[in-house]
Image (cartoon, rainbow, N blue to C red; front, side, top):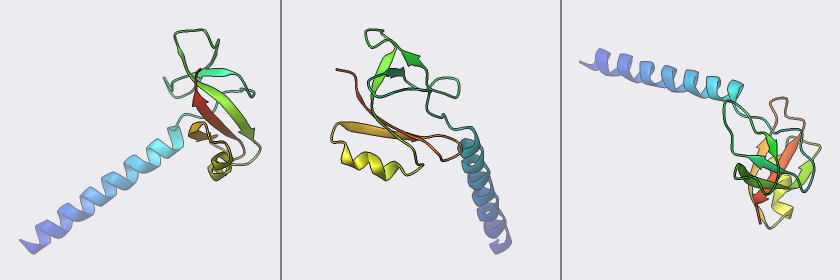
Length: 98
């Protein structure tokens, strides 16, 4: 019985690690956006720059950081989400569309 519990635990941990690795490798990256641009919610693996009056506009870019440190977005009070690109070299600080 103990052997089954250990095997089951190892299998669950392995599946969780694999799922986390797959998500990390395929997470949506920031669009090529500038401050003031609006972007859509993540769909099909990425964000898309859209017009701010578009029904698809979900976020407005408050800042673009030249680092992969999402903590830099803390300096912007209206930010509700930080998105780092896959290479970890750029961060979009996203606020709500107003």
